[in-house]
Image (cartoon, rainbow, N blue to C red; front, side, top):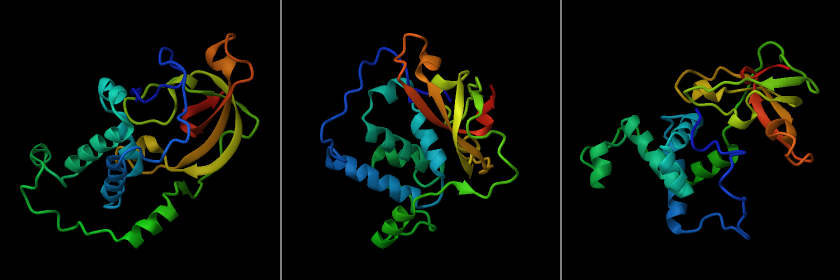
Length: 219
């Protein structure tokens, strides 16, 4: 999906200025937003890819004018309603109108620690052999899917070189929409800045992108 989140290489937004000594959270509500999002994810009702897609498909005007954790909260509310855990009327009123889901239990601090330490590995058993090898020239397919994708818009149609082959990983494009994990070979592909943005680009700039096999074709 060509959402407002996919801004790499887009002109008109000015220079990226990193915040010096940036804290993990700027305010307490951001800390709480992170906590309730993790708690919601641990219910197991949606995948990491679905939650990413819901965050990224906010209306462009909303996405571009919202704080980072405001987007997380909006997405969490959408997921809770979509999966029947909270009613839209309850969100609007700020209080419960119905009993909670019997399948929802409290998460202990120890469980949170273990889950965060384990992470959410996406590597799966590889089937067959990879279509591309390290050092091979490839081209990112010029695709514009209506659903979720992790292929940045600015590399589509451009030629790069395979740097790494990572094994088979869950395909976000299907997993975000309940279509199954469908693991594919995952590659790191290096693109020259001049290939992406023309001769006026800094010749020393290179961009590496992780791309699933179905995102690529031989160059």
